[in-house]
Length: 103
Image 1 (cartoon, rainbow, N blue to C red):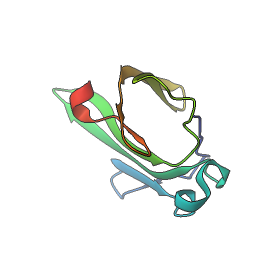
Image 2: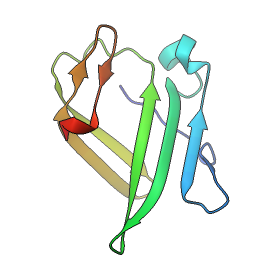
Image 3: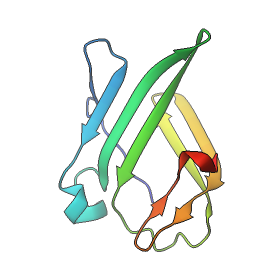
Image 4: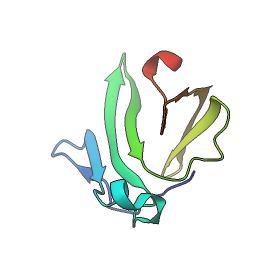
């Protein structure tokens, strides 16, 4: 599964520390929606002990039928910054979830 947001799709708060996106059509259209199935995306810029990092949450609807193993890779690219994670996802009846306890 792969989806993209365009320039200015994420809306920031006044401080520029939180960014949000929502496409309600994605829930019904899945990866055929304008956002490629991205329903909710939120990013939060944080600073811990002088080190800046981002946390993110993504909820997407799409065809994940080729996802047959719990060990999957996730990649998030923002501009030239790339973050990735390989972890065990939890299969649900009709979805997959990556809980915080899995990494």
